[in-house]
Structure formats: structure tokens, C-alpha cells
Image (cartoon, rainbow, N blue to C red):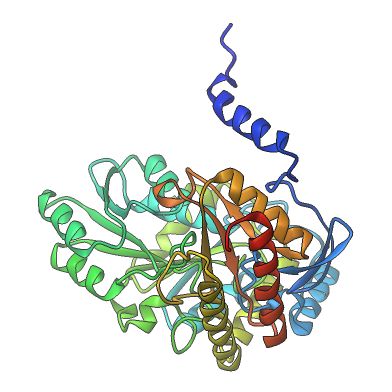
Length: 400
């Protein structure tokens, strides 16, 4: 009998070899207590959090927590049903109204996770005979949406406008085409040249979907993302986002101005056949989104944090994923997985948590430490982060 787990043997061995070196399992960290958006207890030690995607620090906002508690009391712990059956409560409509107001768009559709938002929208609008043209560094949820929808997948080199144009020009003029882009790419924290890419897409008869998961809340004048910052948000057909980053809870969404968009509620399987978000979750999301509309001071502070950390790490001698800070993500490139795990553990022992990212999730086979800044990190904390990176880097032999 064939062991269906045999396909994972190389990864099982790689993990065993890594743990045999004596390092803590970097993919199984337990936070015993979370004290704030920027501090938690890990392994009994007070630890600065620099790997949580909590960009705007909304997880402990007083108004957000109060809204969740009130909804829990009024509506109970869950909906036990799909949005198209018994799972649409007042809170689900309120969070969709908040999204429409935030993005100044006509339609908003909320999913139970950001993954399901990409899975559902892409698989529903691009089917057999259609083409999805995507950046090769696209998120797994984007690729899975393509597979589920049965469209032809055409990938192009990361952030390469000319490569996108060449791919589009080779496709049949009459075919349905969807170009899928991300505002900020989550591994290196680099920003897409959306303005030129959207122009090229429209010139070649394609619709455009932009995933703004890592830019919503802090990039753009109103926090609407890279498309807003580059002045092309009105040319985007669909914006995908998540509640699990700047919004500070869980869930996903799509906003659009397409006049036929509401039919998606009846034809999108990951929306129709999934239980809706609990009332407490949508209440926290709606409250957070409305507060993010007035988050300009937080956005400015987050950008200062990003510039300070990027320059400080570069000056210490670390190799970074981008020449300049482009987002709240700063990637520190490691020589290999073993060195990366050693550095990750050295940072954890210093009381600093970051993400260890490895192939195949990372581009070009890189191992990296991914740092995600928060608007609630104080200037003093950023200085302490740099000091801990210096000590850990020297101990792990990453810097001199």
C-alpha cells in the first residue's frame, strides 16, 4: 500500500535535521499571554512582537474590544450558518457598509478569511476558457483561486511591466482576461508598480484585481492602499483585503464598483458554502475600519518606524530585501535555513519575535527573517529592536 505521506518525506527530514541542531521549532511558537499589540509572553519571557501583521495596532483598541463584547452579549458566539441562509446579521451588513465608505465603492462582500476572499472571487469570475495573468510571486491563495476556477494561468516575472505586457499581447483578444496583482508583496515588503501595470492591463482588454492585504490602513492618503497612493484606484475592478492585518481581527473582503457584482453572493462557492463570521468578529472589524478612516497620525508614525528600522538594520550590516523602506514589512535575508533558524532563536532569546520564512514560500529560494512593524511600536521600542538585532546578529555570526 502506498503511504500518502511519502511525498512529504524530504520536508520531514529537513525539519528533523533542523531540530536536531537544538534550535526551538520556529514554526510552533506559543504565546502564553499577549499584553499589547507589541508585547507578549513567549517561553516565559516578555517579548517584543515584530512579526504579527498588526500594522495599525488595533487588536487592543478600547472601542474595538467594547464593540466585540457588546455583540457577543447581544447576538451570541456564532451564526451557525452561511450568509445566504441564516448567517447574515446586522453586523455583517454594518461591516460591509463600513468597507464601502472606507473605499468609496459601491459594493462590498465579506468572507470568513482573506484566503477565502481570493479563492472565491478569482475562481468565480475566471473560469474555463478565461486567462488569469499573475505575478509569479503571488500569494498561495491567489494560485489556489486560479486552480479552483479552472482558468488558464499565465505567470510573469515579479513586478516586470514589460513581461506583463508581452504575456497579455500573446493571448486571444476575445478571451476573458483577469490581471491579478498585489499592492505590497508579503515576503520582501516591496510595492508593485500598479500605475503602469493597470494601464497595460486595460490597454489589452483585461480586468484588474489588486490584493491590498498588506497595504490597507496605512498606505495611501486614506489608507486605501497602493492603488490609491499611485492614483489608479478608480481603474481597479476588484480590491481584495483582509481583516487579519491592519483591521486587527479575522475575515476577508472584496470591494468593487462593477454594476453586476451583487450576483457574486449567489455564485461564489467559498461565500455560499461557508459559515459566516461570528457577530463579535464583524463588530470589531466594523469599529476598527471606521477608526482607520481617521488614522493619519498613526500612518505617519508607522512610516517613521519603518524608515528608522530599515536604516538601522542596513547600517548594522544586515542584507535587506529592499533598497529603501516601501511598506511596514522589512525582510532580513539569511544565508540559509540553518543560519536563519539560529538567528531567529537568538532574537527570541533576546526577547524579540520575528517570522522565519523559508522556501517555497519565499522568492528565489531565499531564507529570510520578516519584520512587520506596528503603529503602536514606540520610538524607544524600535531602538531596542535594533540593539537586540545587533547582539543576536553577532552571536549568530550574521554580522561582524
